[in-house]
Length: 313
Image 1 (spheres, one colour):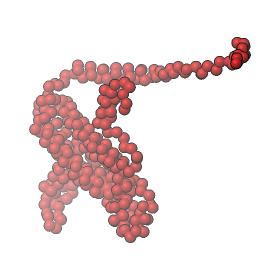
Image 2 (cartoon, helix red, strand yellow):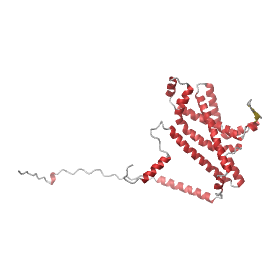
Image 3 (tube, helix red, strand yellow):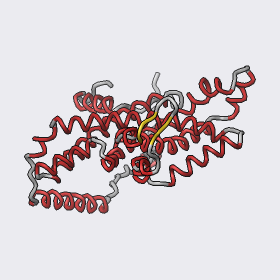
Image 4 (cartoon, helix red, strand yellow):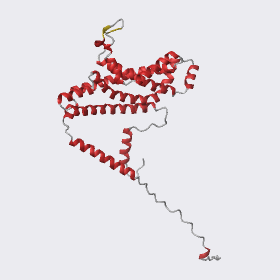
């Protein structure tokens, strides 16, 4: 049995499938402005370095006095004053924020006047007012304690009151914004469960408001650390006061200012790291995945470089 093979002409053959779209050749956008700005920034930085290298600066004095006992005492006094002033500021700010949000017109008006006065006057002026009240009041008398004003109002107490009471006004607005960020339904639900107003604040409102309060509070702590340099005007022996005195006696005033600036940078950098992790802690309930920490980013970068090509992640 034979099968007939049907011959086909080349013209009857099906046409070849159409060719796919031509591959797109991606050309990266050239940002010439970035190159120019980077070159200008490097040039300015180089000019600044060159200018300081030509100046009459005793660079050996900076490492010589960086760990000087007097400088370290000033650092300790600065940290103590920062912690105590912020404690007064945070406690007073929470109290003033609650008073400001109160439906009682008397307490609300008192809180408004306090915030208006202390935010509207410079902190340096407030320090000088506290320091010179001895010209107005000769004695201080609390009933159980009586003393001359000059003996009572020491430079440390002047600095503590001036910075702490001023900070309370700013913290009051930060705390008020945080409390207002919590939905009113949370308070209504708490009251429906029989919780008192104070318990609702402690257990419900304030923990949720911390997410809004913590970031600006961290900035206030860093700002407070730097503001402590103003209390040198009332003869408190903090870091700037010590550096200035050493500079006057050693003949290297500018170098001592560099030492003080370096210590301020070290302390603010440590506080910035603490602020980052504190913000990350209070962000746990608001985002599904927390952002990577700097150490996690470094670790992932190192392992991605070490991983050979083609290896599974």
